[in-house]
Length: 417
Image (cartoon, rainbow, N blue to C red; front, top):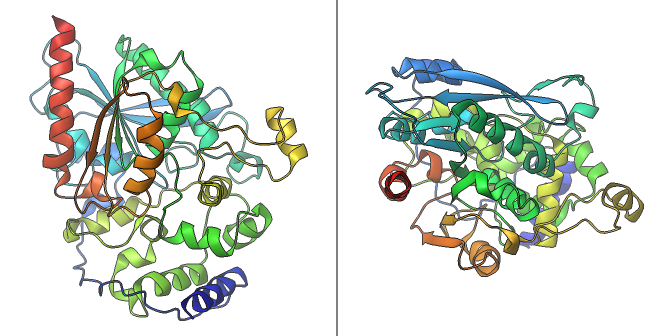
């Protein structure tokens, strides 16, 4: 009966009809107090300077012509000091942007915490988000601009941003902190490019993604009932930029949060319907700021790639839909797999069973046994962290950021000896 109800709901999505789907037994949403916060409408550099930190914006052009804005906090409130500061690079996840690291209070936001601890903090942005809408020749209003998935982010965006940061800072390597898709792209880059590993001193993977066979949330049901046919998904979500319609959002919100989803603003946001709308540790007064900046945009092709991963339970390159098309792109009728056993940089994993998108079962079934033991330096499972709690949860500073700072501090001291 439940499966029939789900199927009916998703059919309604596909054909543009509004439905009332069943409540799945999720707890009733807590009342949210709507705050009027100026940061809701600020740019990332404006948020940084609003809190009294120095800010820089550096444009980066990828090999295939995308222009990305990278945001920098070169030092904390104590001032620049003397000598070079070790570099910490933070990379957002799916539908995220650089604001993910600065939209809590300074004592709770990773970027501010690391800047005040003495590090040169850089915040990356991937193609297709708020700060990745430029191109040397292509127009975001055109179809060709949006022909990318996280494959291209791994292959081109990470390399362009990190190479630029290392060149401008005069450093040979940096510390990388990724969240969600920001971990998937780095795992994939390190698995396919052995020359890239020396640039990464340590890789801290928050809500790490390699495979998503145990995923929950919107992507699971899209994969289960709509499949991974690009033509259908493009019809439902838009051919180029991923823009779910109001009808689709109403249907998904009713399904995951119940009929009265309107009382919880997270249920009207596609990012939280993908990542999970329930958190035990979000600061409700900051929700307008989070929702003012995310979702930050991506391509429908990228979403199709995620759905393909749900169906295949593999960390695999984008499937162009036919043997002939794959042969043209890869020289093989089947998209290649990313082999994480080829990773040659120190990796630290931070994950939770409470996470809809980066479930601990996937982490322990795929990443833990396949990353070579000499490179898997840490595997931390946290209690009741949902997908977004790793960047916005009130427990994250003590349980995630401070342990990472301790590791980096010790490594930095040893490297200076």
